[in-house]
Image (cartoon, rainbow, N blue to C red; front, side, top):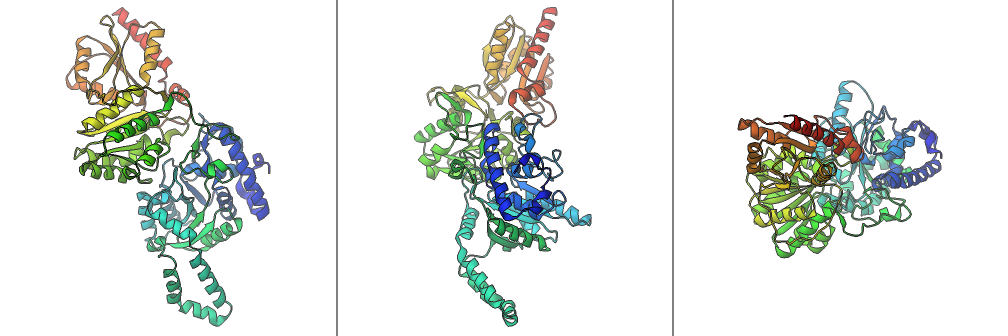
Length: 624
C-alpha cells in the first residue's frame, strides 16, 4: 500500500484481515527504513503495528481518544493519521515529534515523554467527558513497565472506584527500555504462559451454552468456575482493583485483537485488555535485544545493525560507570541502583559482574531514591544513576529522604543539559534549579573524563554527604586517572588567569573547552573559570573576582532561573557587592526538539552569541 496516500484512519474500516496484514508489513518496512535513517524510538514501534491498526479499525479517532504511554510508541498512529510524509523530519527542529503532540494533529489527544501518565490523564478526560454528557471512548495504551509505576497504580486504584469508563490496553512485551523487573512482571509472565485456565474456562462455557438448561447451570455455578480458576492461576490483580479483564490476547493476530477490542468497546464500565506483543517484531536484531540497544537508536545502517563505537571516544555514561565499577572492585560496600536504565546508563558490565550489588528497580524513580536512602542508612554506599528529566519525579525523595537526613550517596544525573531530538520532555535543563535549593547537597559537573572520574572518587571516598554528579548525553575522550585522586569540595579551576584582564567568563562542563577555544582563536583579553562545583560555590574565588574589579559573564546552557548565574548574583547581592554581571542561559520557557547546535542558536546561547557579547564587553572595558 502507498502509505503516503493515507490522510486519516477511516480507510481501515474497509479492509479485511489479509489487507490489514499486508498494511502491517508495509508499515514495518517503512519504520525500519526511515527510523534507521533519522534515529528515533525503534523497537517499541515495531511491536505495536497490529495493535495500532486494530485500535483505529475498532475505534473512531479523533472522536475516541487514543493515548499512548509512553508517547514514543505512537509512530504507527502517526502514519495512520496522515503524517507519513513528515517522517523525514522526525525529531528534528520544527519537525515531526517523536511523541504524541496535541498541536500536531487532532488525533493526538494527550502528550507525554515520561511514562505512566496516561491512566491519570485518561481518567481525567473520561470524567470530563461524562460531565459534558459525551459518549466517546478513552483508550489508554500502557506498556507493561509503565503500568508498574506508582502513578499508574494510583490511577488504577482510583479507576476501580468510579463509574467513568476507561479502556486500558496493557501492551505486554516483557520489556520497558531494558528487560522488566519486579513481582508484577513475573505475574504477567505467569498469565502469558497459563493457557490451562483459559482453555478450561472456554471448554466449560462452550459445553454449557449448548442448551438453555446449560446456560442456567453456568450462571448458577460461579463457585465451580472460581474453583477452576484458583487451581490454575492466582486471582487477577486487576480484579482486585475492581476492573474487568480480557486476555491475554495475541498482539499480532488481527482476529484476536479486533474481537477483544470490540468486546471492550461494548462494555459499559472500565476494562483492561491484556495484549502480548513482541518488541522489535520484524527486525531480528531488535527482537533478540534484551538490553534496550534498539529501544532508541541513532541513525544506523539497518542492513548492518548498530555498531559498537571503537577507539578512545566513549559516552559520558560509560566513563562514569566504568569508574564506579573500579571502585566497586576495591570497596564491597558500593552498590548501584537504576530505574530501568541499565543500557542507557551503560551499567551492563556492572550488573553482570556484581549481580548481588546491582539493583534495577524498574520505572520507579521515587522508590529508587528512598531505597538508596535505606541502603545508605544501613552502611552501604549507593550510586544511583537517573536521567535528569526523570529525576524531576524524585524531588521529594531526594529532599525528604536523602538530603534531610544527610545520608551519603552519589546520584549520577545522566543526560543533563540539552539532549536534542527528544525535545522538551527530555531536556535536562532544570536539575540545577531544583536541586540547588536543597540543603546538604554537593553538585558537581565535570569538564572532561579526567574530572568526571575524580568526582566519582571524591564522592565515594569522602562519602560524608549526598553528592550530585551531572553529566551530559554524548561522548568524550577517555583518559586514565589514578583512582585515588579526589577534588577539594567547592573549588573552581582557573583555566585562563591574567591579572591584566578585567573580564572573566565563568562556565562549566564541556563548554569550558569550547569557550577556551573561542577566547584563544579570537585573541580576547578574557579570563576563564571552570565552575566545576555548582554547590557549594567557590566563595573565595568569588571574593577574589570582586576585589580584582572583574566584570563577569556567566555562560550556561541550562535554565537561567535558579542556576549558577542566579546563585552567583544572589551571593554578591547579599553582601551588597555591586559589579557588572551578564548571565546567559535558557529563558523561562520549554526548549523544543532539534539537534543541540540548532537549539543553542534558537535560544541565543551558541558560542557565536557568547562571542558577540564578549567582544561588546571588551569594547566597554577599553572605553572605561
